[in-house]
Image (tube, rainbow, N blue to C red):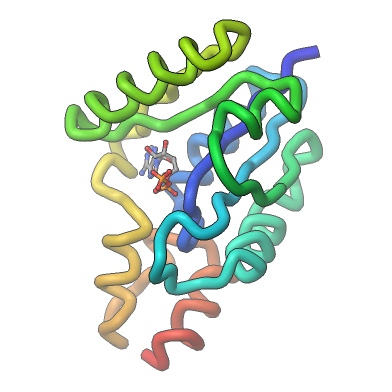
Length: 159
Ligand code: ADP
């Protein structure tokens, strides 16, 4: 039985995240998405809202669940008896991710980090970019996020 956690802020979940979730759910028996509590001091969405959007987005994927966690990713992985999955978009992600993966392996040598490289059509996409463009009411954000997330963004930003 292979289990992995996919940790992140997901503020909000984008189609780039969904691509990683779909692909990862095909290579592990169970995928647990971990929504990090409290790292970003100014998230647009509360943790509860982020979890709800993820749950709605993954409801068709039977081996995927959503949890919240606080503290270190490696502890969250250990508590779930899981390995870690992260996504890589560009070389700019690489340095930090490499450092984190190595640190986590030192903290717990039984936990490995697996990387999924972004699909090219989502290589530019981040939650930050989505929040930037969603401010303008003439933007078609359905290219970036699921419909349930698009609706929440419009509601939140009043755009
Ligand atoms: P964090 O603040 O931990 O980076 P994010 O929610 O921004 O949280 O991202 C969670 C994970 O998803 C990270 O591994 C990130 O690299 C990955 N990710 C985000 N957007 C994309 C994308 N468009 N393509 C591939 N991976 C992505």
